Amino acid sequence: MILSDLLDQPVREADGTPVGYVIDVRFVLDGPPVGPLATPRVHGVLVSPRTGSSFMGYERVDVRSPALLARWFAWRHRGTFLVHWQDVAAIDEDGVTLARDARRWAPGYERPAPA
Amino acid sequence: MTIARKTHDRTTYEKDAPQPGRVLDARLHLLDRQLLDVDDVPVTTIDDLEIHATGGDADPVGGPAVLTNLLTGPVLGTRILGGRPPSSRLERIAWSHVRAVDSAVKLGIHGSQLDATWVERWVRDHVIGRIPGGRHDPE
Image (cartoon, rainbow over all chains, first blue to last red; front, top):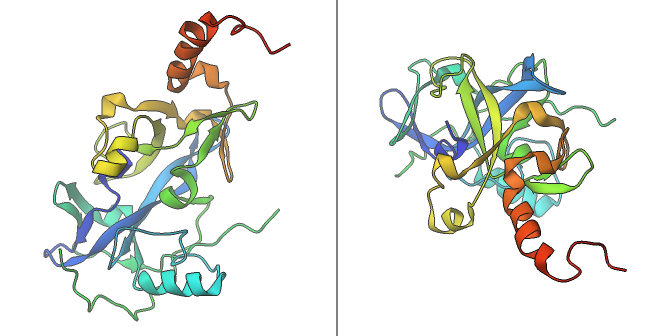
């Protein structure tokens, strides 16, 4: 699958209720090593209730400056959540359908400490 | 499509469990990043990504999936007009060639080994190289 077929797609719950749009796809470098790095495992999709666009990830990181932009983008993407990949039931031309018991997680992640 | 506005605006979701490896968000950390080869020479930019099921199946839904290739190609037109180029027009750079992900994505091989740079090499050999003085450094 090409990732642009998934990004910006509408997301629906199992009963057809629209819940938002895919704004990003999260990978975790914990797969088997295939070179200098581990294979990125698809961890989940980030869903914004309002728009498919996302700028600098303000809604999922703790960056708070410049304050005006940070507050605007955090507000614009309020309600953004993460759905684990195993909770994605189907992807077709109509968008993404979540599993019936799909659980929503906070979109943030722990950033590595600066070296 | 109208999205129901009741959707959990003020809901605080539970934090995801800490992950055993580095977290990379496609748009935030990979897409549109510069690709540098082993000598830090710019090669191209990452226009798209390809994912497969861990068993190699092209359809990754329904089970574990992994990122397999970085894609680059003629995307300017489709970014303006919508859609994406056919899969066959995209050049693939295997993830196994990636040695670091930073503000740029660094490869462990030379750019000349990649199909992604064939246009540049063709222009060098067939156009620039035929201009008098085009085959050596300025003196």
